[in-house]
Image (cartoon, rainbow, N blue to C red):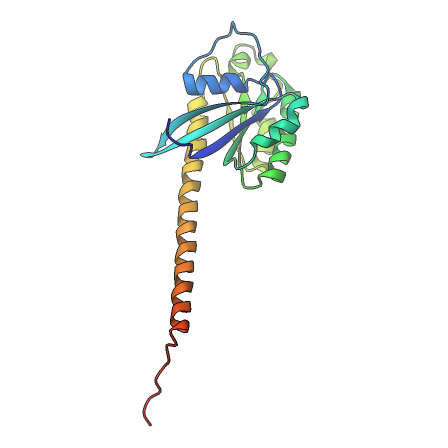
Length: 210
């Protein structure tokens, strides 16, 4: 795999399905027979994504959701371009926890772009009574965080490509904006050097003859 262009972190309460989300996206797999396994610290994966003819390699960090790992998880926020805040559509407590993760990110990586992801949509599609978080309830938080909102299913794959395409699109745009800014800074530095050179060379304006 080529070098990582943008770092993406997945945050959320334990058992919301972050690892299943990553496995479905990167490997295209889902195994309902596998029991829940707690991620310790973070697991890493990467995938090349293309949007509008432009490619980017996303480095994806699937972080632990248990509170006892919170101090460790903070280590993985650094230099994250985007974060996917996950919650389980059948568990309101996981949604209530999203604002905590958002606050943590804004403290440590204030420029990190947020995306909200409700998981296990297949469960609420089969049985609407299992849904504890509605779009109507989630949308105000998404608006407050200026975050796009997605409802996904790792089992069916629904909306997972759309989620990561949206993340990739943002990362590509940010990379281009950073390159423009860097070029502008270099031009200003060069212009400053040229002005210094003229001063040091004692360039003198010759007055007109009277």
